[in-house]
Length: 398
Image (cartoon, rainbow, N blue to C red):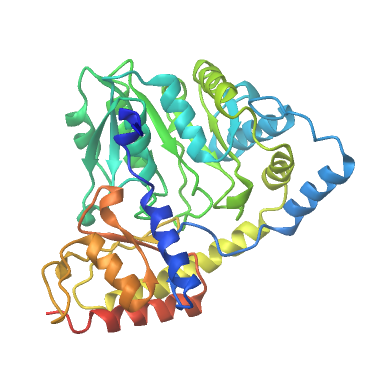
């Protein structure tokens, strides 16, 4: 019979993972592809984190099931981090550690949303926000930021989108895919709108908080009245180069943390015990390796920005964080090089993979058809070569 459920048929494969798979396929055929599709640091996990994990294995004390919400000492350390760095009074009871921030968000969605509820998603958005809302049979309400406003949604747009069915809103700052950062002033304006609606919650994805070039990383949960209204999502993949370790977490009011814990207990149970020991070393230890990585990202951003400006027709904002560009490439839609016509972002990325041998992600998956996403979490040499390939591949389109 082979009939999947309606909820599965309502969502698509992750576009970032799909493009990464295509890039691997090309590489397996001996083609030199520069992969700028995945948001994955090209640095190794810092040594002190690896050493902590090795020590945990050698001690032999961490081979049984951990508590579903995470080891108490890790949850205490995460709460202490938010108290000290973000001015949010979380306690260990507010923390749930999961198998990556993606699961953290899924837990929250499943714990909070009913069919028919609405969730406002700031666009451009990370690809899984929309899919996870639909997986719960709730309704995504897409509110778009513009390139002219650094892709940031305004408080006025939020207010206009709220209905009696609105249960939550979700955004990331620094943002994947645009690199935009919501300032404290931006967040204060949004918080003022949220506080007018007693049942409205905020899901704030802060996984890129360490990769922020502005010096202003404000957690919306720290603003007056927002502690009880905010679910903060974070993780170790980006700032600590720990993508494969799969450690994410939420910090939220206890009733939401308890609900997420219940969901996780039925689906995966706890995060890997050894990964948690590495995460404890990361959150408690020296941030020098993280700061060094950020210096490299900062330099790469400027390299790519200047090279993108040199490609005719491409428009880009100047990202303030994360490690992505989200350029508008719609100038090329409808244009032909005599052999091929680019119709949309999917065509653009497929052409660039096949002819330029650069792997990118179409912007439609992030809620903006005119754009594509490229990650600059790659070496300077690869980034310079990738931009050169793009410029050369597009030169004949008229």
